[in-house]
Amino acid sequence: MTDQPWTRERVLDAMRGRLTVSCQAYPGEPMRDPRTTAQVVRSVVAGGAAAVRVQGLDDVAAAVAAVDVPVVGLWKDGSDGVFITPTLDHAVAVARAGAHVVALDGTRRPRPDGRTLAGTVARLREAADVLVMADCGSTGDARAAEDAGVDLLGTTLAGYTGERPRTDGPDLGLVDEVVAACTLPVVVEGRVHTPAQAAQALARGAFSVCVGTAITHPTTITGWFARALP
Ligand SMILES: CC(=O)N[C@H](C=O)[C@@H](O)[C@H](O)[C@H](O)COP(=O)(O)O
Image (cartoon, rainbow, N blue to C red; front, top):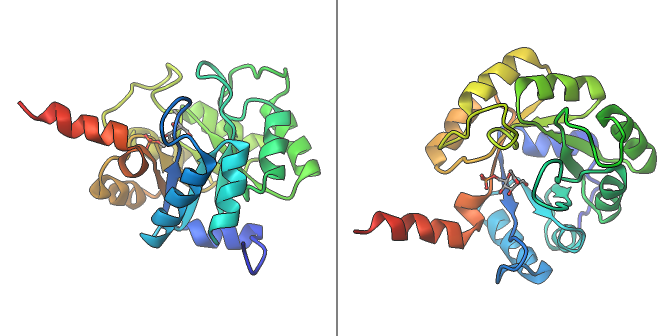
């Protein structure tokens, strides 16, 4: 629980130049349990995470109760097309679960509820006092999301929407483009697999860097090691 409210300014100050850790287990996985998420969240905060990113309403609520750092919340519904907090209803639910930042699909693809991103952001702000992070897949997405009134631009969907190649590491080319084209803070997210890549991303002018798999997904990390052996 927070002693002081996570105002917009406090959230941005906490994240600026620092590490956000995404703590997600996927449907059917052994760690897919809000209590486990809370333990992982506490562990990464102990290691220096300045903010956490958490998927699912119960997980968001558990994370907010577990740590005193900003919680970026999202609700994944499905795994194809627009699935990261895809509708206004999903976004409002994530905010009501206690997220300080609501991450949502920030692409220009049609949304399942037929709303525009700008309309979604405006209605979400009427319903809750939260920051909004747009998960983008290209510079065009980022420009459109900035115009739509979000607070933060994420490179989360680079390599997942068909507009950019799926690079092995973070898409630093996209980071350069978005930093040059937009004025909002840019969060580098997606395939940041080493501390050096995280530092490189920030050195390119990003506002913050978010790491998921390489810190919190043991099945994938184990696979990297297992496959490296003869
Ligand atoms: C594309 C998509 O669905 N990304 C998701 C968004 O929340 C998560 O599955 C990622 O783990 C997260 O973005 C962090 O990225 P990485 O795990 O590569 O460090």
